[in-house]
Image (cartoon, rainbow, N blue to C red; front, side, top):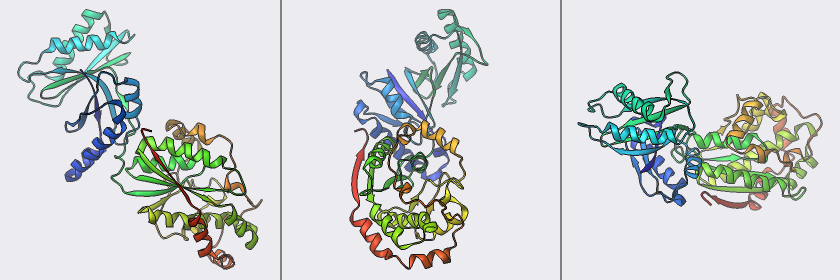
Length: 392
């Protein structure tokens, strides 16, 4: 029989709340694998066992579990019955031989862990016995420092698990334990990574995209829908609001000095996003800001933009450089979509010399020429909502 054994780290530190976090993780695993035929997901304390039906594709299971936030690592294992008083090492060694024969390795090592210390044999005893059988029956040699393959054996009270793989998961917290946040998402590289970082901390993300429509095409909207679908693989259900922002930008251009436009756009976006966040019962608004990356992300401009909001503004990327952000975008599979060309509203009416050290008093004077309440209302009335699910 085959199963997946998933481990978590951070959840084990939650004290009296640990059960709540573990149950949420189990629920998310069931959701991620619901179309694979998985029915049984058990909490074994410090590890979770997922029984795999014979028809389940190992590749699909592996792909799904690498995107379940809260899992530190997992393995696809063979299950061997175990008796504490008289463990059947022959059956355990036979399983290890089958696992090794499925690989093309020349060297190996055995790593055993006992979850139940009542087992009469120590971890080292088991490693030596299983390793000797594998050497004898396969002709492979032991290499303890840098083996081609490691045989992982976990021994619980009634069963042992044997695997030759340990696959990294995302880590973090199970989605749903940290409330909801509204994420500003463009078609670029940064904002999907910022959203992912909050999802990984247990937040359920709703998305808000500002389109340059009707002054530009829907290209950025199509990209964003693809990005949201990719991120939905980590949180299973998503909602996206698309705001046609072109006419609001034009009103700002006609009524305000050019150097302040970029900051004014951002403040207006925050006001609209904040109203949608309240509608979605979100406790914060997430942006993809990285300190100093563009004119709107200088310390002074970040400060005056945030002044327009009442909810907390969360900036998960604030201390990251572009290379770090790109690497993470590739890891979560949003990079290839993000670099496709589009028509971004942020590039509309961009002045050649935007203000980089905007003062809040100056900005308030400029904003007196705008009917802010009406522009926010206009954005909310024209918002278009879409729903996304995973598995689709």
